[in-house]
Every structure is written in C-alpha cells, then in structure tokens.
Length: 91
Image (cartoon, rainbow, N blue to C red):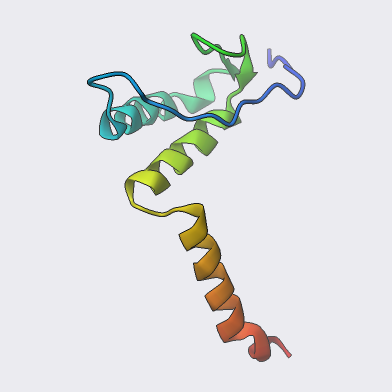
C-alpha cells in the first residue's frame, strides 16, 4: 500500500564527513535506484522521518550533475544559448 506523506520534502544534498566522497555517494544511490519499484517511500536516518521516493531520483541527478561539473549557472547558460539560437526558427 502506498502511503501519502503530504508535502514533506527536503532539497539538501551533502556529504561532509572525512572519507565521504561523491563517487561513493553516487554508487549508493544507484544501488537504491535498482530497487526503486520495490518501495513506496524513503525513511532517511536524519531530517524528515518519511519522504517521497521521487526525491531519490532528484538528488541522484543533482549529485551526478555536480560530479560532472554541470552547475545551475552552466545549465541556465546552455538553455539560454539554445533558445537564442532557435528562437527565430519557431515562427
């Protein structure tokens, strides 16, 4: 049975402990994503008690973007340049 946890979400991603690293963080999330269809929600060990499982995919994408050097600024600049390039072709 799927449980609705309301609008509880968190948008924090961090790994700050000595020995913590982004590649290990990504590997852990990939393992969890392999079982994505087998659970209904997440119960993190800190912050909120229960969060929507879609947060796992959001955090995974954000961390992969960071690891690949894709910042929000770079993504915005890329979108703006693509829109400028194709702006006239839609008419």
